[in-house]
Length: 95
Image (cartoon, rainbow, N blue to C red; front, top):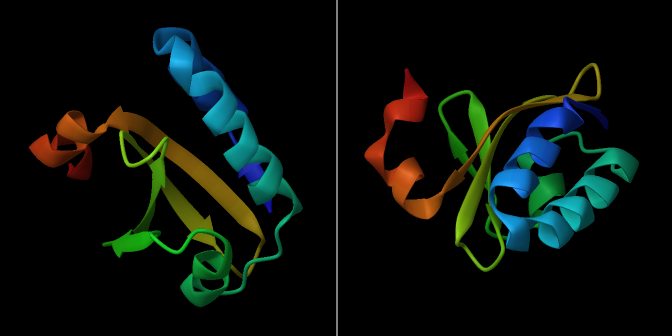
């Protein structure tokens, strides 16, 4: 997958120091992946789930949520936000 944009991962890691390694691991897996469906994603990330047009990944033991839009046809994954679990539950990211 072509991951767009890694800067959001780096920004989240800078804000939450303990998040750098888990996000880097996720990024390395995602950029090598050739996902064609949510089922393909779940083979590697079983807890990944769909929320409208987005795919939500649990990061660092479900402490954080990575929200992405995956275009399976073009092989592009657009990172929208990295949130704490509490921020995600507030639902403001949906608008």
